[in-house]
Image 1 (spheres, rainbow, N blue to C red):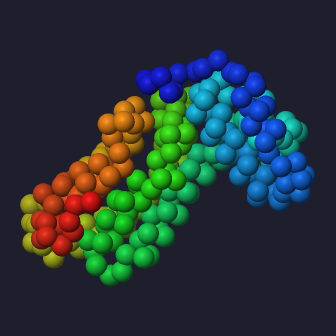
Image 2: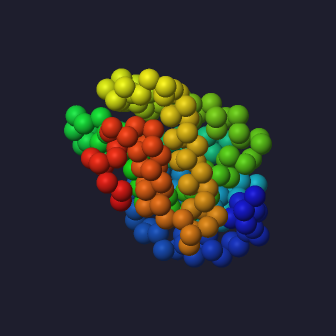
Length: 232
């Protein structure tokens, strides 16, 4: 596992310093939804610094600039906070690809590329968020819950990818191409690029991921991607 995923000693001053920068008035008057998101973002920050095992209610509240009582009011316990943090990340991803898909028009290849490119949006590919994704991937105690939650969120995207690829296979006459194989390969490439961007940030850039996935699509679906969709 990478250094980013190893537990680091908790430096209370880091959280406290950040908390001191938060506007006091906004802490008092924030709505329930704002407070929940504030706590989730603080959880992302804490896990990215200290790992799952090093994250406590105190580190989260330190980053959020809120009391432990506020956390308990919004989340039953730390496990619930973790689950909602995962859900937040998954729903953020879903909102991005659905928004991009709506702007892609009627062209099938543009629709597929909209979903592909959404995986490399700066909001998703921040170092903190990538660290948190892989922290949950690698933590045995959370893996099953992670898988169940993400299957629920990802089901719609898989169905749309399957529909798009099936239509292109039919249009292009790719009679020997298996749609499930294409989708699974895309998913492996998404995860693989995320991991490499985390481990080797100076060697892997989001544009590398977009370009290499386009190479794969041009190989598998040449009638749709060779000429009409140039590389980034």
